[in-house]
Image (cartoon, each protein chain N blue to C red):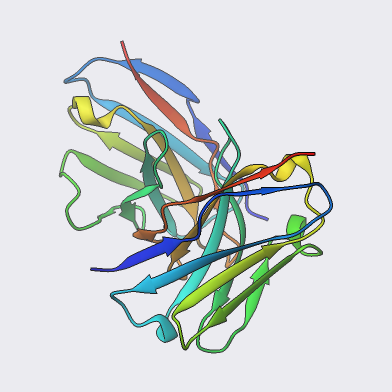
Length: 116
Length: 107
């Protein structure tokens, strides 16, 4: 079945970077698009950006434009989201999701905690 | 960016009740709308897409309607497993945006 498995929880200090992975299986990764969404505790879902896997083209929310990089490794069917210059407000659960419009396939989420 | 506004932010209802949640976009989105259900500690689950198309495996008590800027999610007869938070999401723009969520609680 279609599945996305994300990397484990991270604890980071302010000013550092985090890189979250998302491994796909059960569908054709190279024909897909991968979205990244985050959710702080008690808050709404917030879109970060996406990558068209085949071309590598990316698009980011303006809020994250300067700090985020989304990449993919087609040889391992894995997408990555790296967020730099972390601050406490970046503490959230980060999700990957497959699809360019809606998504029925989501990863389990990765908790990223930013704390000094 | 297209802004999505849901109402209400929360509601209390009983098992068997009919529940309606609305989502308004800041501009027309041509039915490019999905609805998700999220339970605590879990990833969102897709319920409907294209405003009214039911995702495979989703019970038929869930339905969606709307056009232009205004959309609704209806649960015809609320079941115990439906107590959760619901989000709308537009994909008219390649930059996704979500509503703020509607928490459905037990009365």
